[in-house]
Length: 302
Image 1: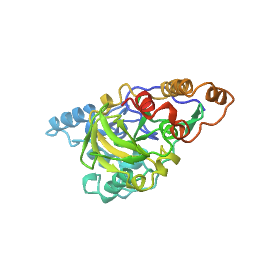
Image 2 (image 1 turned 90 degrees about the vertical axis):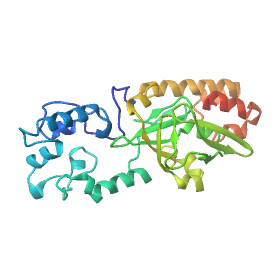
Image 3 (image 1 turned 90 degrees about the horizontal axis):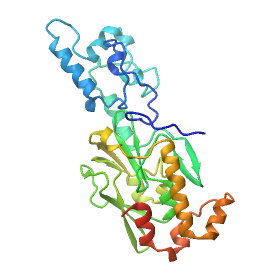
């Protein structure tokens, strides 16, 4: 299956709708959402809200919620998360589109923060799984943008095979902590060796996957789903995702990283890869002579 190519704006994971909430409310004719329904960080939403407030003296509609109330009738009003494709129908709004008072709305956010709900599709690139619709950092970490703009973060399958017995240590990254893109974030540990990992985006940590701390094998067996590490509220999401690999770019990058590894491993491994052999599950463990520091600096960039 061919990966999807690079797109403008933010590509939210399995965010299948792209009509702006104002368009769905019938206020405007056409505007496409490119921020995974992260309305709080949307300049267009802010401008529309301000414009509607300026017209409040002469118009009854002040925002998209008011227009939804007008568009949909009483008990038949669909939840806004049905309208935007976040959940499947039927789900009726019982709070008159006052989402700030809705326990279901808060529950959805809590679920997305604490656990992964959707399984990605994978490509096999040179023996390594690559999840589609994820963004990849040069230091072999990934970012998955959830519905509403939150970001899930983890290490990719390549580095999990590179250091096949590594454990995850959050270090100073605690709930409420701030991580900065391209700066040292957390640590992985294998035997007596430690390596720092670069943060792929900037933002505030909302959650840490405690299951991975207690069961490191999750990070290795399922790095893109149950093995996630952090949930983050990103700063300026569009800016944070710049220069990350996506779609075809991520495929080309992974192929180049594999070639780089083959050269380090020598002719024997290169011949194995050429015949379609699967990569071993712990490159460093089987080839310590290459050197921990060399592998870390080459692939983790630290």
